[in-house]
Amino acid sequence: MSVSAQVLVVSPDAAVLQAVQDCAQALGHSAFLAAGLAQARRLLTRVNVDLICVDSVLPQGDVETLLRECHGERPGAVFIAPPSAKLIPAALPACYSPRRDGLVAKPLRIPELEREVTRLLSSAPGRRDADLLRAGPVALDPASHQLLFERGGAVALTPTEFRLMRYLMERPGRFVSPQELLEQAWGYPKDTGGAEVVRAHVSNVRRKLRAAKLDPQVLRNIPYQGYAIGVDAANGTPPHRKRGAGYSR
Image (cartoon, rainbow, N blue to C red; front, top):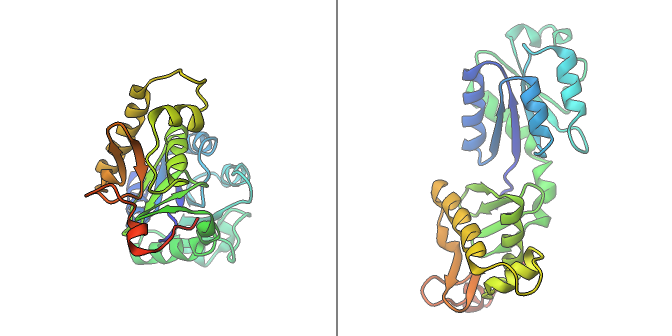
C-alpha cells in the first residue's frame, strides 16, 4: 500500500492548477490548489505538504519565503517555467536545487510532470510507510490524517474523524460502543455526550468514502455492539482471524 502524499500547487494559471491536480490525483496523491502566494501561505498553516509545485511567473522572493515557511524540513519543489529556464538557470529562484527540486517546462507535458512528481516523492512518503496503522484493506496515515486503500484512493479526515478512526484501527475487529468512543477517543466526561454525536461523525466519514468511490462499509456498525474496522461484512468476524494473519502498524 503506497502512501498518499500531499501536494501544494501554486499558480495564477487555472490550466496549470488543473493539470497538476489531475497529475497528482492520477498518481494517488492529494492536491491543494492556490491561485496566489497569500492563499498558499494560508494553506501551509493547516496542511503539511510533501511537495510544492510552483509557477515561475510568481515573484522569486515571495516563492523563497513561501518555501521557508513550510513546516519542518523544506519539501522538494517542482518549478513550472518557460523552456528558456532550462538554458538559463538564473531565471529560477535562488533556492532552486537540481538535486532536491524538479523543473518542468511550459506548455506542460503530463508524462514529464508525472516523472518529476514521482521522482521527488519517491523518498519522502516512503519514510512514513512504517508508521501506517493498518486494518484489513485500509490504512491510516498519522502524518497526513488520511485513510489509504490497498487498491488506491485516499480520504482526508478532520481531527475529530482522525481520532475516531485511530481508536478503532488500534483495535481491529473489535466493536466499540459509542460511549467508549466519546470518553476514550474524544475525551468526553463520563456519561456525557450521546450516541448521535458518534453517528454524525461516522456518517461524515462514510459520506467522504462514498464521494471517493470507496466502500463506506469498511467502517462497520452492529446495533447494541458499536463500531469496528476490519470485520467481515457478512457476519461481523474479523477477516484476519479467518486467515490466521495478524495486523501490523
